Every structure is written in C-alpha cells, then in structure tokens.
Image (cartoon, rainbow, N blue to C red):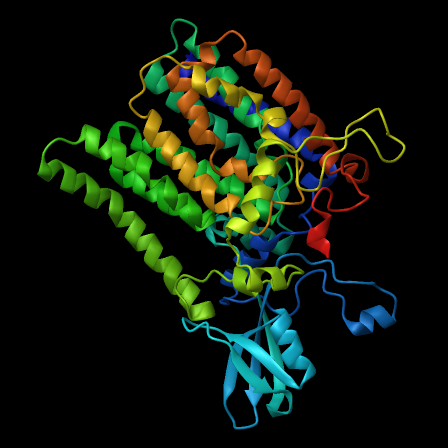
Length: 481
C-alpha cells in the first residue's frame, strides 16, 4: 500500500494542476498564448537559427493597415537589431539611440546608433550615408524555458500549448517543496499538515497563482526559474548533492539570470557541512562544474547573437520604454520607490465602471504582497532552530534587489509577480523556522488565497473590470508622459 511519501506528492501535484488549469480556462489551455516567445525560440533552434524568421507575431505592416486588417502592432517584448549598409561599403549592426539628445541629432540629419558588441559607445552617422537598412528580430529572454518547450514544439510547432505546459511546470513546484519539507522535518507532530498548508501558500496564496495559470513568456520564465530554484535548495540542503545543486542553479540562471544571487544559500551549506580542505574543495568543484559548463554555453549563445557574452538582448527591445532605459538605465535606484510601493503598499480601489463599489480594482502595476501573501508575516515569529535561515534570507534579499531596481514594475500584473523569484526561499525559511505551526498561519493562507484566486480568475477573463483603466497607468501616470 502506498504511504505518504508517494501519495501526498501525487495528490498535491494533481490538486495544483487542476486548480491552475481551472484558473487558466479551457480556451487558453487548448491553444498557444499570444506571447509564446519560447515556442518560437525552440522552433528557431529546430530550424538551425538563432534569430526569429521574419516579423514577430502581431506585427502590423503598412499594407495591412491600409487594408484595415489591423490598426497597430500587438507584439510585446521582441528585440530588434538593425544592420546598416553604409556608403563607404562598411556595415553596422545595432539599435537606434532614442534619448532626447539623439532625437535632436536626428532633426539635423544625423542618426545615433548603439552598436552590438562590448563597445557601447554611441556612433553618429549622417542619414544620407545609410544606403540600406535590414532588421533582424530576436527572442531576448534567457533560453532555459525553451528547452522545456522543445519536445512539444518538435511535435506541434509554434502551436504548442505553452499555457498548459506552464501549468504542469507550476504544479511541480509544490511537489518539490513538499518533498523537501517531509524529508528534512518529518511528518509527525502535526508537521505533515503544516507542510500541506505551506505548499498551498505557495500555489494559491502567492503571485504564483496567476503567474502559473497564464503561461505567457514572462510568466513561463518565472515558473521555470522558481522550479529550478526550489530543486537547487532541495539538492543543496546540508550540501547533500553539490553537483545536482550546481546543475539546478545553472538552469535557474538560464531562466532568470539574477537567480545566480541565490548562491549564498549553498555557500553557507558548503562551509557548515563540509569539514576539511579536501572535502570542501571536492564539493566546490562538483558544484561549480555544471555552472561553468552551462554558463559557457549561454555566453557563447549570447555572443553569437549579439557579440557580447553577457547580452541576452533586452537592450534591443522594441518597446515604448526605450528612451527611459537609455537615459536612466535598465537598472537604477530611480525605480526603487515605485517598485517597493508595488510590492508592499499598493492597494486596490473600489471605483470605475459598472462594478463600482462591488468588486475591487487594482493597478496594472499590481497590488501589495500584504494582501496577496499575508503569510509572510509568519517570518518573524518562528522559534525553531534553523541553521539555513540566514542563507535563505540573504539569498532572497539578493535575488529581490535587481527586480526592485528594474525599469519595469512587472506590469501587467495582479500581484507583484517578481516576488515569485524569491518567495519560495522565504517560505522555506518560515517552515523550517516553525512559523507555519502557528495556529493563524492557515488563516493567513486562506485570506491570501481568496485574494489571489479572485485576481487569477479575473486576469484572463475580465481584465477590463479587474484593472483601473482611467488613468491607465495609475498611480504612476507620469511614466506615460
């Protein structure tokens, strides 16, 4: 007869999968999402290409506009690199500068370009010296999730059901967490019940609920990254499997590069558990080997595409925020205040439209984690000894910081979705610290789930009634100026 070791993870997987699929809805599960970049990247690999063939889906050409087949572009977050042929016979690959100074130059007949490669210095070219222009489109997101898509894309092409695949991957995360909790803490004394509430907190009472159920490129990347991060922690716990921990961290980085900042967790485990210089060296080499191999492959891929081993392509995104990115930077303390507000203090309102006073609306920038993951309050109340606590929390803070300094808040989102990158680390610290044994922990999980399930259900069905639409970027309207 099957015991809990096998039956509980299976039940958790099925409940999570069915719940996420219900949130996604039949229509989205049975077709590719609008932003299935990873399916296109996987198809490019299968065709022997590193770039996207032709225009991205949603591109509205002048001919289509004249035929009234479309009114505007509907693609989102595709990178575009231009190849210029110059009068002197040379070529330049790069992206146009869009700062105010560069716009002033353009009015004088001079174009400023940001070239590919390690040299990011601006190059000014007389417009009359440009003989021709050719554009090449790329998927600029780190390539890890495309590996997961390869089998489905090999069978179904770009029609592969990326939303369904994202739901499956998202349902595996609570399984990994449950196995870690049960293995290291046991299930006696009510701990088994604590673990089930903890995995429910992640799956349905955190931003992972709407992220896991809506499978577009940004969400798929975060789910894949979170799955690899949880597997990394499980493998690295007590430094039990250094090579596997290094592999999972490397794969996490191929999904979300800043997950590399979760390294302090393993360093702490390695230093505490490995005694003697030879044992430490052996464990360090086993951990570093997969990181070095996969890191070299990713850098080679980046160099082949953009002539820079550290460039994934986001610098060349064809988006409205390019001027801000070029003038302020992709990462800056200027964005910190806005992002902290989105994460912790942005609250819903009861106004606008026919649902006024009945159902709450949120900003397109999301809503506070205090509403969406109130179980975080248990972090400071755990009293059990946990040697891994500071490694987990330092890693969580390090992973969170790049997103807090990022030029984008994460919009369009119901809840602060960048927290999916680090919430699992905090949840693990809560469980091993004893915070989940508090009698009000299930109450907080239930309250968070009620909020997240409401948002995840409305997100793909009635977004016009979920988000504040007037002004469209409330409360950060100045960003649209």
